[in-house]
Length: 279
Ligand code: PDD
Image 1: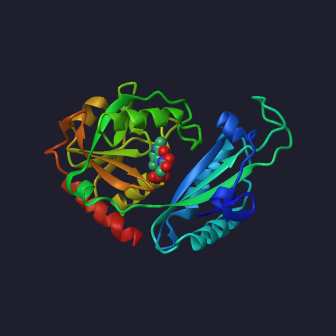
Image 2 (image 1 turned 90 degrees about the vertical axis):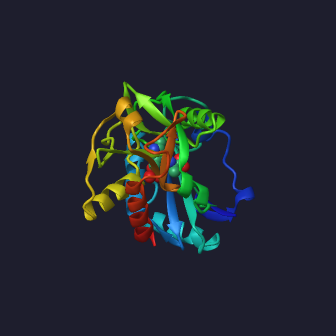
């Protein structure tokens, strides 16, 4: 595949980053994942706005204007099977420092990287049966609103879910369900679609935002409110959302059925609206 690195398009095997890059040594960088359907980037403006927020959160200025990002991503899609469904990963690190030192180096140029990956179609089995999730303690840091490349807690949490036969870990902090290891969380409580409010504890998901917008546009009762662990366990429906997996119904939680154990009617309605919107 063809990737983008610091101004150049080149084959992935020829793209190299020096070992003193602060992304490699410190995880000092941020990223985005933008889905593209049939060559069209979904919600690019919102993803770029969030990238700017993440950069500000780690005290970096944007290396490129939004227009320049758009041109790079579109070119990358053209060069990589642009008509299929793909996601674009983009990453900005603080750059290559002269030596390893925790404090920011002076006069460093950011490393800017982007690549594409196929988005596999959602398996029919997931749509018919939903997926399993487990709850785990949220062991992450205090700035989960920053899309930082430092993903070790998320990696360990997701692997723990996979090891127990589940697709996602739903993270619990101070008695509340926050989000997944790589997804946002929705539940249906007494007919109302509920997702936790934005704040430093969770990523402001672009898919989350789109789902809320679709709920508002189509008059589906919804609310942004904290979800207690008890509410999570009693929810009629649980969904997790992300740019690459869209809206996935969770039908088993910690080995117990969610609702009647199959994808619920509210999810069915919302996934239909989502599919229509992205088409
Ligand atoms: N992850 N919360 C976390 C912790 C995430 O990592 C993600 C996405 C989301 C959903 O955000 P969005 O709807 O904007 O994709 C929520 C991406 C897909 C990833 O790390 O690959």
